[in-house]
Image 1 (cartoon, rainbow, N blue to C red):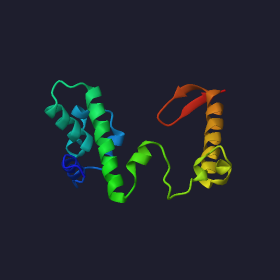
Image 2 (image 1 turned 60 degrees about the vertical axis):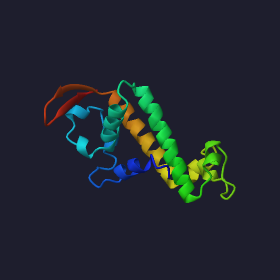
Image 3 (image 1 turned 90 degrees about the horizontal axis):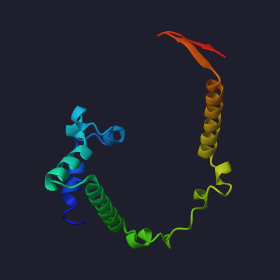
Image 4 (image 1 turned 90 degrees about the vertical axis):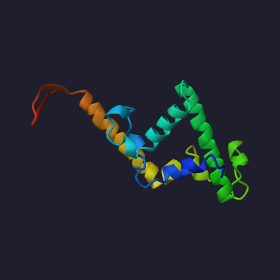
Length: 147
């Protein structure tokens, strides 16, 4: 692994960090009580300190470059040909997975896809029914609805 990436990897493995907390982020760091446990806040603060005057697109570009370097390092460690992946080629060692192509019959076979389609259809039906209703009153205990 590139020696410039190792401090970043070490920081991300800090046990004080809450993994994935940034997935619930609204980017209001000044209001957040978890900034000391957020890897995105740490990395953003460090970037702004190291690159004063840079704009968000510069930070985004550098972040993508770091992501690609981390992926390359992971592929090297796992014995995966990163250049083939970057070029969109499939691995010679693994057969093509036909279940990924949803235009075939996979969407009718996979139970998770069937359940997701069923859920979507039911949610659509509920939404269609609710759109025809009009709320005429509201209290903490009761919503009065008229058709």
